[in-house]
Image (tube, rainbow, N blue to C red; front, top):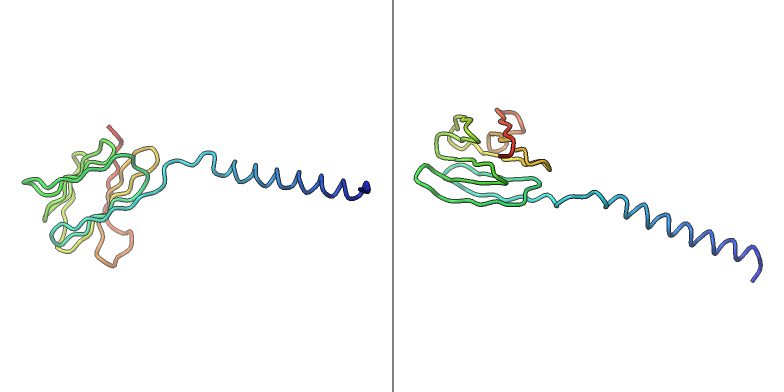
Length: 126
């Protein structure tokens, strides 16, 4: 092989290794994938989104109890309570529970086709 062919092959191998390292570095710090769960409760659609490890839901006398990574959220026909903070729900109003990678929970209430405008509650993990 000529010297030029060897240089081209060597450059191609180095380039392939650099691309592989860049792809691996991009995925290195990735945490758990984002998850979404939707639940209907009466006239409300409750959506839990984000990076959580443990989610349970249970129907209790007061309504729907959702426990996500140590945070408890109770939803009934009239209100939603997240870690002690209560917000009034209108009929047909939806609840969106967002969990970030640190375990912080944010609860948003919105009309069925409304955007992210509404009250929000932040709660730190227990």
